[in-house]
Length: 466
Ligand code: NDP
Image (cartoon, rainbow, N blue to C red):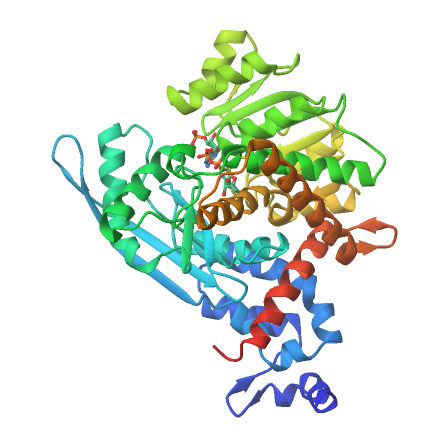
């Protein structure tokens, strides 16, 4: 069987047989992805990165190509798109577009965050849901991949407007989700406050108090340490990378972008492990604090961003440090860079500046913050590079621990969750090493993609053509 197939994939004339498409090169397959998903640049780039990493494996194990696993893996199982009508405090009617991309349920129920941001569109959500499928697989936990959200901007909205929007969004979404079907969580613009409103409306419509959402407040069944999990997990992963190269975080200068959930807790854990955090940012600019943050300054940031919903420039005023208006953190000298804001925030020029200023390690707290050209610069210069699907997987991992606690009707202590989180990040790191080791260096991108791929692909093969 395998021999016959080998001739098939090498023979271009056999590309199409009986309506079945086999791919004889990465190029052939990627061209088809581009044609099938016109204009979806983010999604295409995410697919390309995974396929580049796993192609060699596919050639060694033709069962994957033979069963057309690539095309099955790059087609979402289901995409839901819906109207979200709501009224503002003046009684004006607004219409937003809501989405849920249920990408892959081969290894467990769909799981992934909801994003409320004006930039949300189908391309971004397909890319995020595709990434999430491999990230969730890497955690070794039984969760499939999904992502959702709306092109709604929570900035400047009143508490009542946010609540009405969340309730309207859930009034449509609730029929597609459930604790054994699809379990959404937070992402950009969706934090504990929004999760609370979304969960409240789900409970009202379904008449069930269950683990349908994660990231809930502890009083509503949320896991302790979930807010901290992505940022803490990121720094645990960085620590693993450094230790594997006989280094540590102690005394290292860390540049962080963003000042939301991931950035705040990445900063906190970096401080705990002896790092000096010199920057934070938001979409208006960056603060540069050469003396470094401390616990008191971090408490100020948390209050500013989570309660007051203010701008990071206020930090610069309060602590009399440099404010780089409309600029990023990537020209600031540092040993470690942790992009924790959004997609594509580090381009090739930024990457060159980071390398020239002495940066030796970059790990993605955000999803795909480094553009492909930037990643190439890091790899060429032998930086330790932790891709988001490995480095920021701590959040979804603790989300799954929240699901486990909800189904057992119990709550674990902070310390218990923290130990499990550290174990999970350490396991993810080991998997990256197992599959990414090459020529005495480690390609964490390749390692993460291969490890994530094998589990999902094997589960799909076991379950037949569904
Ligand atoms: P938040 O909404 O809490 O914070 C986002 C931060 O990024 C804010 O400081 C925001 O600034 C800034 N930001 C957003 N868009 C832009 C932009 N276009 N340019 C510059 N800055 C921007 O989100 P999270 O911290 O939860 O998420 C951050 C990233 O981490 C996202 O990529 C998300 O997908 C990823 N992630 C999050 C997880 C989680 O558990 N929360 C899990 C895994 C990944 P401003 O206030 O001005 O908008």
